[in-house]
Length: 356
Image 1: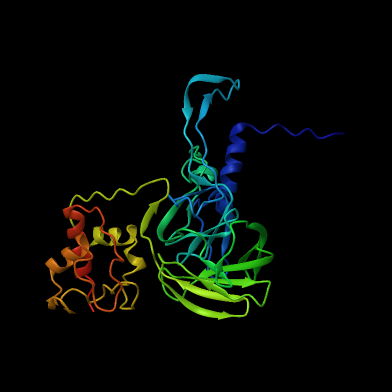
Image 2: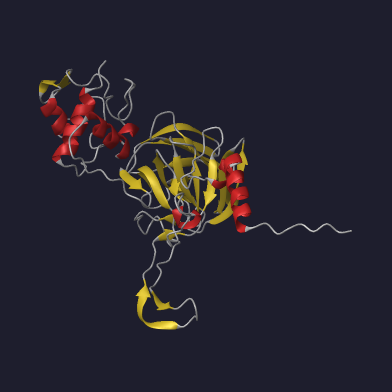
């Protein structure tokens, strides 16, 4: 005799679903700003923003045209208005090594386009938001973090003393011990490129290898400070240093309005504006002086003599960062941020709290 099983009511299904959610919470939660790790980089191919890169960098990319509006329900043109173009990179590959480095490699241009730190991508445009799961309808992901390197002009690689031709053909990518390598064909040889985190914050190691061992490879980039790490038959490796400073917040800009100045608000600003990338809190040297024990100390400048690090000095350094460059550090590295008085006061209070 067959056994009849009563159809569960909607309330029964709801209770069962809630129980499953409690038991397997990780199944229903997600992070739309996922990052990789140094030992296991995360690779994601998606639409990426072009960040205003110049035409020489994007020489193989075309410029789109506005398209007329239409009705998705019947496919007919609406008769008025148009969709604006979206400045995106349709064939880029993004890689995250964690907070220290993320970068965009373009398979059309066959070169490193930009690098950033302290974040990766906000994928709300495709994955939805953690709060309600809704996508926002934008084709491109948005960066989250501080961009510190951007490509300029023609490709920097030199082959036997000459720039390689503009006729490049992407071959593919593979992982070597977890790290991605990219290869492309140009001028009758195959070039393999690896991009990895440098030894210090906001630095990138880029290594080129030619299939023709007799090639003499070089690197030329007048707009970027770099160190030659290694060169030999058919190979060259360089360490790229920052040439840009842009802060990106993904799809949601943080609310940085401050009702009352405080050290806590200053710490939030320090993190949000990416100060952490250049100014350490533990006394270690980076692209900028450490903030640990800075307040109350003295600085010696060739043009200004001994200067006490008091509130006035801190305010000047924040609002006019190039007024006095600490000896041993590169001038012009820090941009001037659009901060109001309470935000500046908060940063000063935060730095004052960082004692030895």
